[in-house]
Length: 262
Image 1 (cartoon, helix red, strand yellow):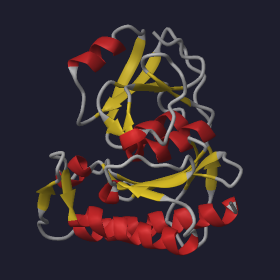
Image 2 (cartoon, helix red, strand yellow):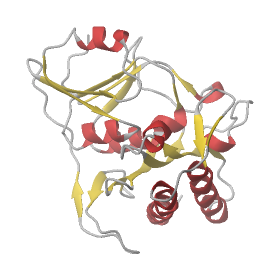
Image 3 (tube, helix red, strand yellow):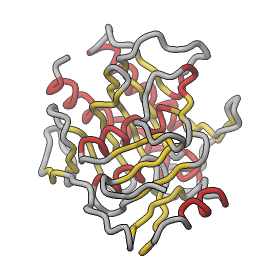
Image 4 (cartoon, rainbow, N blue to C red):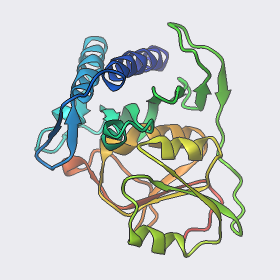
């Protein structure tokens, strides 16, 4: 795999998909339909999916591709693949909140090694470099990469942790778990931006005690890992793996190393 070519493509496709999403977002009212699992889907999801899928298949036809909008019921047989959520945070999108993202990741042997997370309404773009280290690029975003800032997770103080939690999926179980820690402050964020807030050092801990799919987490997880962070299973604190049957994730905890997990 030519990772320099890959990351240039990831960046370009994320920006193109983000532009298509914003056309819908800033336009007149759009239709919202329910998928089979009752989650919402809009024309923006489908347009972004088409842009990203066409680009990846044209450049790397040999690499299996899984996207949220094209997922099939059978298990993936490869351990190395692309996985895409073209619009993560559709609920935030529908409610005209800016916490939605474009997510593209490359998973190698079950590990998300490279990824891009783009929040078009917020103008924030995070991705891994060819060497796997993570950066945030400062906009405006042109055809060529602009100024980038290397990302590094925080050095946490376990007596005063900064916690980020889901904006749309907060529940009592999550609050009860967070209560085990000494928390300095909490913030809420939608979509995969929670991983990115850990990667930038803006938060120390993100627990998710709810259903997610691999396409929800892979790109953000890659960015977090490239900044020195970790994403582990809630039950045994082992690294979260990808390529699972059905692409369902277990409950998980994303955190900066140094956080003493409860």
